[in-house]
Image 1 (cartoon, rainbow, N blue to C red):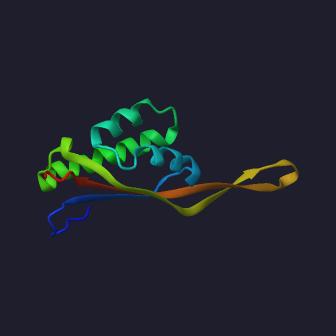
Image 2: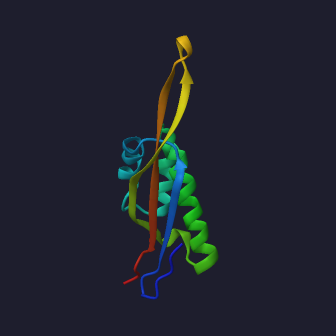
Length: 122
């Protein structure tokens, strides 16, 4: 979580090594919610059929709860100003095969960063 001293307050949440999915599968969900309001984002993520949508839903919900509890922001006034996915390490594990051999299974992971900002009231 990040607190800025400027007039526009923002909450930043980062999930590292928890998303055990490839970047391109998470990216198609992130592209749908970038720039949308918090309430609209929740509706979109609940109806998406992708596995990554549930992980991102938990992150957005947690960031809004942090904004409400720590900074006193109203959840209805929040929108997603920045959402990005970065590639992380690749977890490797071995699978036993015939004749005592083994093959490597590569499980890619990713970092998800979501920044919520308060809508300006002009």
